[in-house]
Amino acid sequence: MDTIFLFSIIVLIASILQTSTGFGFSIMATPFLLLLFEPREAIQINLILSLIISISLIMKIKKDIDMGILKRFIIGSLVGLPIGISVFLMMDMKVLKLGVSVLILALTLLLILKFRIGQTSKRNLVVGVFSGAFTTSIGMPGPPILLYFSGTGTAKEKLRGTTLAFYLWIYFASLLVQVFFAGTSKEIWVSSAMALPIVIIGLVMGQFLFRWISQNLFRKLTYVLLLFTGIYLFVQQIQ
Image (cartoon, rainbow, N blue to C red; front, side, top):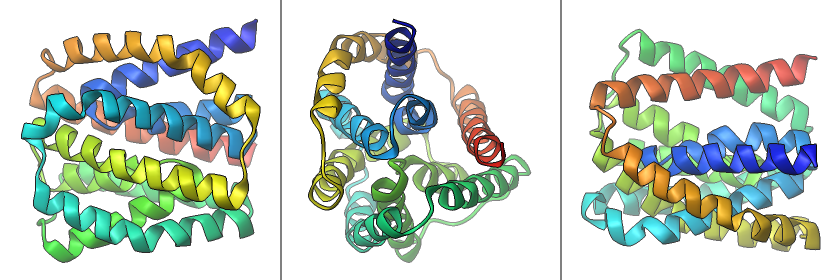
């Protein structure tokens, strides 16, 4: 019963964040799901639920999508997807998550210190590569995109719209890659089905919250989520 309650809380909070910011589900849910499930189960549940959220929101946010950036993200991810699944199958997950945590913390501190970068076509492609690799390896495509958009000072509407549209592609492709190369299980799909009503509640609450978040608050929330993810992953691996 405690596990079901914790699972429900994780999914609810992550769904609200994903809907209101465009990037919260994998960043918030994956570290905690890894406490309740094996890596394969945690990653695939995350992919399934995030895909459902993106499908549900795509018509509402289509006007905010930057199609040029989206196309380059997708092209880049085609390179990153096989890299990520190779890392997932061959590398020690503890070492991988420790490295990711250090990278996230270092880049987030740069953002807090007002480090800014220009947005270019080549950088869009590179971010797509990293996001694709992150998705099939640890189920978290958000950090590379979030760090990039924050560093370029992208408006919250454009960030949410483009990110959610990209997730529609990357989560679907990553789920197929994961199932094909790592296999799947009944528990993954049953757990995902059980979480659907909670995801719906999170969708409604997140849409309401988005209208009340200012650009400044949005940026601060971004930093908090990134710092939380980096610190949590780091502490989890050194214990």
